[in-house]
Image (cartoon, rainbow, N blue to C red):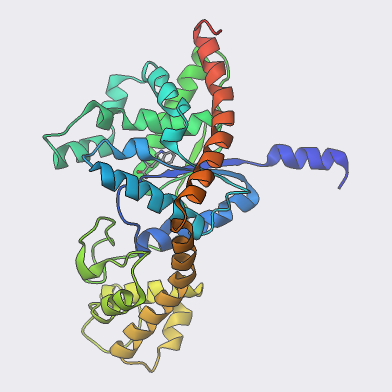
Length: 340
Ligand code: TRP
């Protein structure tokens, strides 16, 4: 490759930003649906990942839970494959630029636009006694997260696409009012992740909060707990291990087996052609235990040394803060703030 090609390639390298809220104990569903693939994102693009702790306080949360959720998620993200040398992984609250830009962007976001957000309406209904301004402002903070890093692509779940749309609206409004400042990002729902349902009610999504009972496998469950949950998984009323719409239980288990082994559902069906349901459930449990074992081991190592974990947080935050400051300075100047 000559120098010009190298240059062009460098220019084409996209920047990807995503964040995840430390709001619960991550499940097998979160892992197979998204987290499993986050380690790969940094291979083809510059990847930044934030633990969105500022977003976590829009709903009531105990201080000790917030603290634990943040450390757990940070360590887990490394354990599932985010490379802290190659990628930038940090806690949102460690980079003050997020809160700063969020205030500035509030003034370029219309009340009506924020009022239309489905998530705001849903969450307001769920907790009518805590409809706080943070909940309302949530998507503006999210826009700040994304715009600070000039991200091209924002991988998100379906439910967050509307927020990315609002982010684009805000970015365009600011760029038009002043001059091009922000990269206008594209929200992308990944097509690769598997959709995993509860083991006890395979018509409902596998939940993320604690105390979901035996239907939810947590990423950090011990092998015996995982085996117990799989053995109790509900199945369907014939005896053949084949995926179909009228057999949500078996289909879900086949989906899990295929995802943890990186094979297709058809290949999984073939393996269990002659198996009983009981044998099948045990095998899915065992495969899950084996897939999660290295993650748990890496996680436990990271959690055994709080100082080392803190150093990783500091290093991620300082890399992120450097990039964020550059954007934020531009924004302050364009609006007309006196900089000293
Ligand atoms: N709101 C997102 C969620 O609940 C998390 C998030 C916060 C996010 N900031 C972000 C996602 C920026 C993408 C980009 O899933």
